[in-house]
Length: 129
Image (cartoon, rainbow, N blue to C red):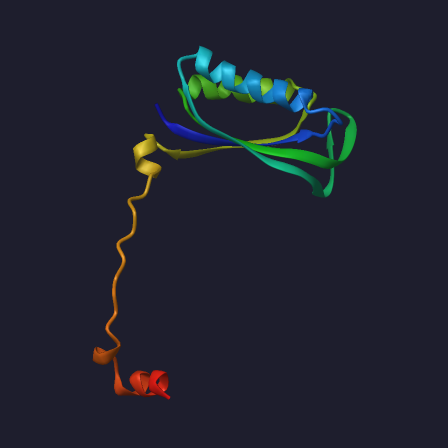
């Protein structure tokens, strides 16, 4: 199954029940269709970069969140349809990160030690003064 990331801007409400229900609905849809939700991250409530219109309403503030998941392309289309119809969603996008989660994970970088004595004399003179 391909590995995706969904970025969503939801309309802001005073109580977080609405955003919790939206995230739960999205994650449960992926899991009920045989997918795996890897990570859900709430990025906070922020002022939108410009006034946005969705479902005949204007918004200036939104709740930003992301979800990383593995699922089939068919489930991805149905999830996009759910986002399109939901009145709490202002904007969303889905990115394909790779065919598997292992394609996206990077190995830890190795530390390279540098010996100043083998560097050019100009650099060594700079550090010694």
